[in-house]
Picture 1: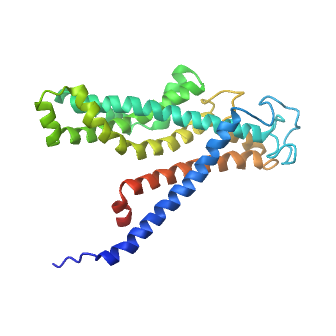
Picture 2: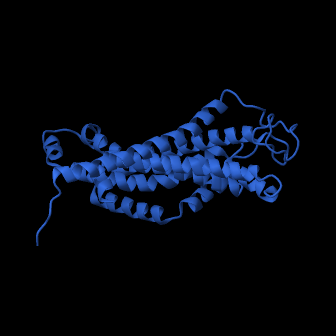
Picture 3: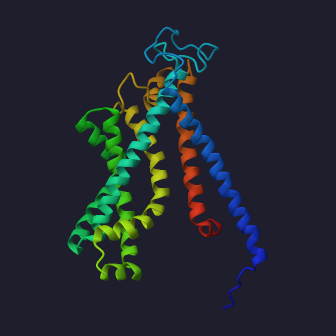
Length: 289
């Protein structure tokens, strides 16, 4: 069988197309996600109206005074959307931080401990990964009570199993390298090995999964809020806004459409950024796909 190897001239157009797709993903994802982040940051310093202000009139259409209209209680929808962006960013950042810390610690323990501990942790991780994320989050929130902190903790713990499994696999591969074995033979301790050799090789592998988990955390928080297990009033969550607007969607469609659009834009932006990061890290894999 004859294997045809592409020439350098044939590889250049494919490489340019790969870089072009990567640039588009990063730019579009960065713009979408950047707008949501900017709105979230702006909500910390300036809001059009007070969140509890109900003087705008019920279910008013968009106007110069209320850019997105008002909800069924007379609150300004644009204000609610800005607060929802803030809660989404807090949920994403907080849950990803928890998933990263817990997942990396558990994964490193499994990779560096003895066989019995590794097998036990691996079995627990398999069970946690197989368990539905949203259901696990619901159980934690029901146990601690509905609040933003509970939602962040629940979503972070639910996502930590995937990070732990990936950390364990990557760390085990690094520890099996000859230069690590030589360093261990020379007397380097386990903690120093982790700091010098394992962590620098683990973090690049975790960037894309953590970025994807950010988007999943935003969806999970919206889902919890939709069923009444998220951040309670007066905090405005996009999920609760969707739940409150479903009974008046025909009268005031903007109250249901706008939170959904922002939620979709956030997820698309995060996924495009993650896809762009994946292409940068492994351009050959993108050209194969």
